[in-house]
Image (cartoon, rainbow, N blue to C red; front, side):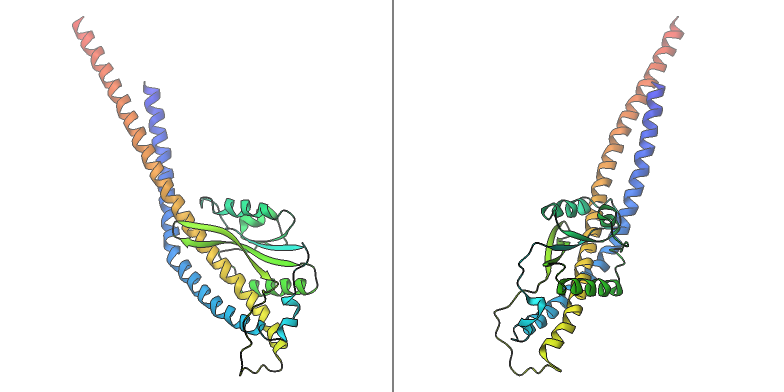
Length: 268
């Protein structure tokens, strides 16, 4: 009986340590949610405005001649994969990796330590600390490779923030740009010409798109981690309650046995 009590005490101590760890990680995730969601909303607003400007330019007859607006006729695909830098975020990373099974022949560029560990790459880019400089360099590379015909389609696989409790992996196709049926805007003058301005804008557009999707994915990672830690805390507390109940029963049994032995001994 004494061995069982000692084992229960050890298990309670172990689960209690896990509970403290999950609480700490949950607090860290909660502290990051406000900042990450604010950055996500700002990136969304920026890209909404930028998308309107790009759609306006695509409606110009000269810009429709750009190689960035060509029809996709091949199957050479490149995907930028955004995953987390750390685990313990529920199904956040696993959902991205599962989603990518739909594109078995695609070349992958990893952003985030977990994606880099899964798929490799020249260098590891942090998803939490993804910088505009890194985004710009990657955007220039993607645009150059697309124009050169290395790839027929280029997209980014990221996680969409639906709500604090729900996040969904998805793909956004970056290039080629979709043609629009909008009528060309009148009264707009491009210098030196529409096509030159369009080509300068595209790199900035792809840069902004990469940053926006990475920011939103990180907000999803933080939310997913907080949800996972909340569930872990609840499960750990339930386990501690059950172990303490078993521990108290074992102690009560030991005390009862000792009293019985004392009474039996005094009677003899």
